[in-house]
Length: 299
Image (cartoon, rainbow, N blue to C red):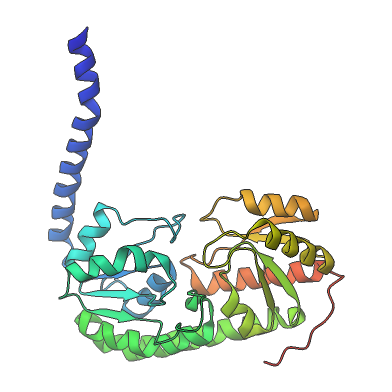
């Protein structure tokens, strides 16, 4: 009947309204039970850094959840609520980081009272790669200003911050040493990545990143053909893709090269372990490309 059809059409809207009401009530209760300050960060590796510095003294909210693309993701209701109660926002801060440019900056303008720390530390005007956290040297430089900001934002952690900062510096240095060891055999070698996420890591450890996309844009057919010819000449055996994006382009290029697709994630939360995993994948891939000439790298 028409009445039954109207009821059926109304159900999704009613369900959505009830879900929103439940979420609001749940959030309110959770905040009453959890008086800790809220720290909001843009990407999961920043959450790892904050957690290493303050432990469980703060609620840490990540704006870009696992699996989401920084190029297309828009904050959801729970994240907007977290932003409204936050005592500190930790930005990537790079002008070419699309998520902050399209979503976060306008949201922060609505919350002028919210303290913001920019972890680009002024870098980025002449560099189009926003993935600064993939460079251990840059992460080491982030620790002191981040700890200083957290001293005010999370007062209960202030006394432990010096010791935690020292421990974090040691772990970052150990990660750097591990990457230098793992990637020693890959110096001067090229690897092919669909997304231009690994430029800082490549530069730090003497590798050459060949990126298919530039500024989150796919290449035109002429440039793509040139890239495939270059990769074929180098004997590239692995095409690296990022799990936040559609694998179709990586699979297409791999098929053209007779190569395989492997996944490396620049947004993984377990920063240190992830970089070592990625380094091992890069080193293994360059060992397979036996046709590659060695190139001198001045670093």
